[in-house]
Image (cartoon, rainbow, N blue to C red; front, side, top):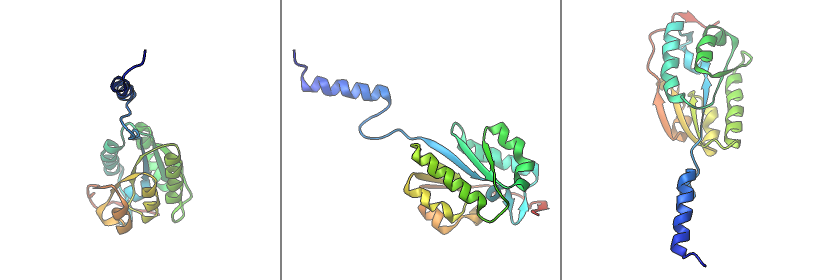
Length: 172
C-alpha cells in the first residue's frame, strides 16, 4: 500500500522537529574566545583582582554553556588563574610578545569553525579577528575605547564592557 504524499511530508516534518532540524537550517553551536590581556589591561594597567574578577563575571554571563579558550601571557595568567579555573575556561599560556594571544586565539577560532561552530563570542577588540566573521557569526565583547572599526563592522553583534575604575598597577 502506497502512503500519500501529504502523509509522507508530514512524517518527514515530525522527524525533523524531533531531531531539532527544520528545513535546511543547521543548529547553532557557540564557542568563546577570550583575549585576557585585552579585557584585563586597561589604559596600560592590569586591573586589580577584585575589579578584574567582577569584569570576568560579566563576561562569563555571555559565555555560559559553551567551550571557551583563553589566551594570555604569564603576567595576566598568574593573578587570574583561579578566576579562569572556577569558570571552566581553558587558559593557553602564550609568550609575552605582540599579537601572541591574538594568533593563538585566531587558531582556536579556526579550529572551532572547522569543527562546526556557527557562532563565536569573542572578548577582544583587535582587528585581527575580522577573518573569523567569514566563517561564523561573530559576537564581539570589548571595551568601547579598544574596539577596532574593522572588527565592529565585521561583527554580527557588539557588546561593550563596563568601564572599570582606574587600574592600580602598571603592566611590567
